[in-house]
Length: 85
Image (cartoon, rainbow, N blue to C red; front, top):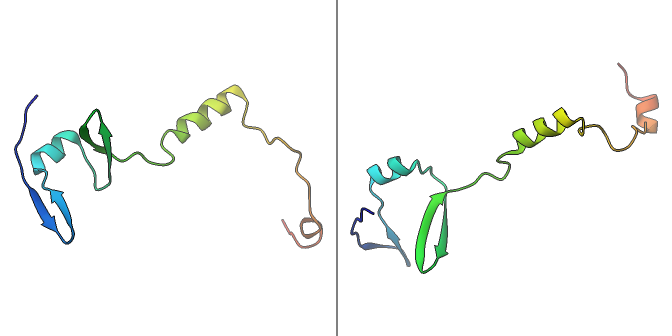
């Protein structure tokens, strides 16, 4: 494991770490990261996206035929009187 020694810097009432550009590029970190504490260590990783993997799941459902509506379409009064094709 390669180690880099650095110092905390004062940022207002907080303190921060400067991460060298080469490290950020090597880890492919974007602007948003997640911090976690695991076994007494600070872990920095790219932030996950809320809808990550949804496309694959939707494709899998479509391939299984499980993407149909659960209920029949129920036209409303607006659909009957106002909607025009």
